[in-house]
Image (tube, rainbow, N blue to C red; front, side, top):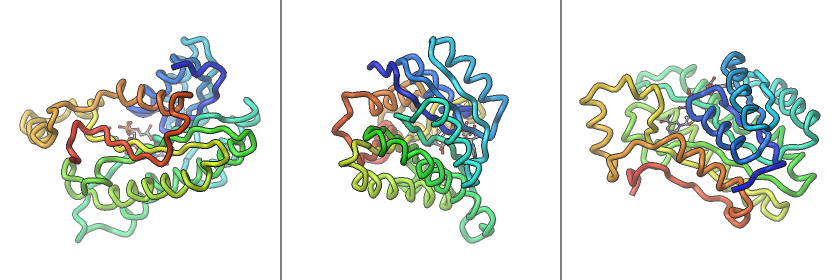
Length: 249
Ligand SMILES: NC(=O)c1ccc[n+]([C@@H]2O[C@H](COP(=O)([O-])OP(=O)(O)OC[C@H]3O[C@@H](n4cnc5c(N)ncnc54)[C@H](O)[C@@H]3O)[C@@H](O)[C@H]2O)c1
């Protein structure tokens, strides 16, 4: 899958999945701009991206801040003249029993997982519409599909990610004729470094709920992003794709 000459933005690029996605997009030939709160992490990812012989930009920003996102995305569009691929990967969960959840936990989860997707997509979409080409891949979670059986007490996270699914479908319809596709991955538990903290009992609890008895591999998720960004996926839009080993069946 050749993405040579394509210009990609990956949000959450300093994170466990984002850095792998950035690397795979670059390996396929795309220039990659990372947007994340973590400036040091972005710099490391940019170095990794450049090893593939493509261009990299590291643009630190708080993606919950509309004006900051507008400026960050503007930097990329100004530098490269447009954006072809947007991967909305920034996010992350917090758990709290619903009956004890504070308004602040609720608001933070919605901001981090849903408002970030609005802010970045809103900033990038005009350039995609102008060039009549764009690929948007959002990263939700299986928590939004199956109610979070893999991670208990994640109602705010699940609600925010369900918002990402709704946004994906509605936007896919809105921009389809303009040559922009909008799809969404719904990953189950991934084999990211954080999972190394699982006790053997917790690992067994997780695997017992996954028909394949496999955690998701970040490389496989990243290759799915590359596929959705590739010419082969031109007629795929509005899809919510669980990457969960059959957990949500
Ligand atoms: N890892 C999993 O098992 C899993 C499963 C399902 C869904 N997901 C989703 O995949 C995405 C990536 O997950 P991950 O495991 O790489 O998480 P991670 O915590 O390793 O990375 C998330 C990145 O997002 C960035 N971020 C968070 N809030 C931000 C903000 N306001 N502005 C800018 N950057 C911000 C963080 O700095 C971090 O680098 C997340 O949306 C997560 O909800 C992950």
